[in-house]
Image 1 (cartoon, rainbow, N blue to C red):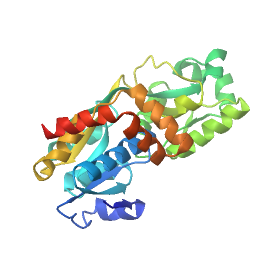
Image 2 (image 1 turned 90 degrees about the vertical axis):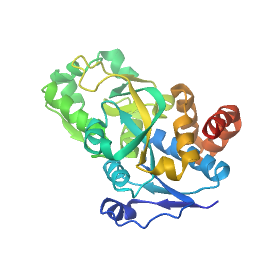
Image 3 (image 1 turned 45 degrees about the vertical axis):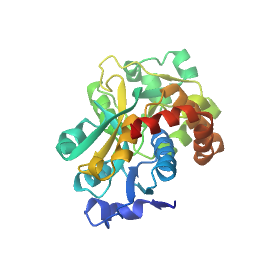
Length: 287
């Protein structure tokens, strides 16, 4: 089966509802370049093409166009819906026009994160950021991720809820981790917006800042979502997405491997080493 990858060039077509209809034996899976989303999406792609005789086109774009694409029927499937808080706005807007296929993994978390050496120095809570010393050491900046992410919206709420005089730097996940790597290498002060599962927890010793106001919510679960009619058009694939259930610690291990050796290598190793688990998902889809 062939693999096709649509990147940002397709975003305008997706959001405008102009994307061409997929072949009957092909599905379009939306994804954003977040570590967990990439691993899960590419793992699912491999299984869907090899086990369910269905070609897959990967559509890489921001999270907002993915929900729009699902609601308009231009994207078939998305494996990265953070619920109940992070994507709350998208679920409220599009929930009646898309299908929730169930939880892929739970015990996920969002938060503001620091290297352990800062936590040990006393930066343990978001409240501590009000201290002029920390504000000076951090240059009044919080390193964020992409503007369309739910975490970015919530982080703006954090700044308001805690009355912080900080600028949220909006960038990509890769820009965030690059800043974290640079600061950790130099033992410098940095606060990043982040989440788990993520490979960075395997790369560095990190700690979540306490959030006494609860602005970033609690434990989250990540769900598979599809366009309306997808379960009828591709029942086995929809059931497969519903049957995926992966432990978050196991996912962290393979994401870190993906960071070190490449996502494709990590997916291949997962499919080999966790073959019994994958076979369980496949049997579940066919029962």
